[in-house]
Length: 172
Image 1: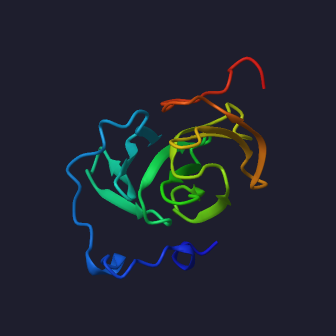
Image 2: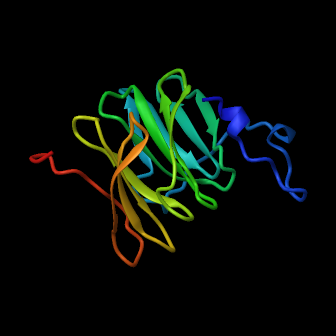
């Protein structure tokens, strides 16, 4: 996939992504649950508005990966192998994007899992499945075979915000 070709075109009243360069982020969205994770032993990954930031705790170097759908990033979760991570975006019919790490190459696109935003996600312990939960208005729990980009199961999760989803460590 070519992430730049998939990127949403800014509306007439919005600045283009190339108009401003990100120089430094001084924090992260602390009101969002499960918003920070280790991708390596000394590197953190978390969402900041419409991007995902990595922070090397040794060098304090920051890298930024901009969202594709253009309305913000709702969740980030790390694959058990640490070779992939998933970004669930916000917007009308947002997607989940699976990236390779450390290349940040877009690998998979999961479509039609929620109507407006993803609130949380988690890979299965063996890494073969991904569970995501959408936010308002649908609150869909979707289990994906992410490598095939297909939905395995979809069910109503709840009628209010869900802050975490997990697979059983005992049963597949």
